[in-house]
Image (cartoon, rainbow, N blue to C red; front, top):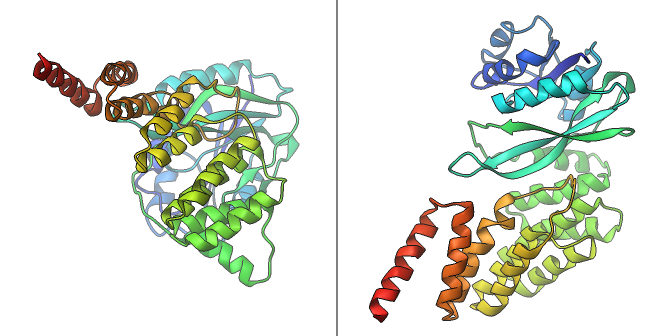
Length: 360
């Protein structure tokens, strides 16, 4: 059985830190917490779980802080979490199984990161992250913001899920400011940095600048496939928000040159045509989303509802607008297979029933 060090960086996490550490304590052998300047009770609460608490002067560099934490680890493998992450009981059992069965020749383990959920707690937005890594490999964190662990070698995908259970949803320009400060100092962004800088610009409603940076990223021709696809989707949103629907459609279609179509993009195209009342075209793209084969072992973003419920409910709307009521009702029932208690499904059922009564 392997041993595991948990390494975390924290700041002012008194609302969530105990919840996180309670969830992971049963299967980690060492807990290392690096505090980057808390002014609340975070460090006091952490002392209930470990004495290995270290201070680190914040330098606007997440990788620097994470590498400092990793350097303190002493066990076979290193696990990282954020303070608002938890491991649910069902995943604790999977994690324990992984810990007992993991071969020492594995260099890193990818785990699903569930970050958004529907009203029933079902994960609807997930992607893989590099969660567990062999300490002896001395893998390093890269990038000051939107950092990642630069792993290589024997990497496996696990069915263990980490759950993002954020309590506070505060919009901040912190990441954008870090990028701007680096650019002001004359630093050049990496290709990944260019992509995430574009996303930060877009999230802060600086759409024209975001468009420029997304094009710079895509024109390099060297982006990771999944980032290329996501960049096309985000670029299209920027164009839509600046009322350039022609360019928006071009950006969405551009995503198809990088890999097989993704349901998220097909639905985005469907919404594009639906907004223009082109219901036949919209239905085509929603139906295409349903027919797609999901990419196997992809490390990209995955939004489950776009592969199932959403295109069904949107086909229902489109075919209803086209006067094809039987087909519309059939799609509503397909949507019910995924979310039987959906308010939209229930509303549509009542709508179709009243329509039949009025025709009798």
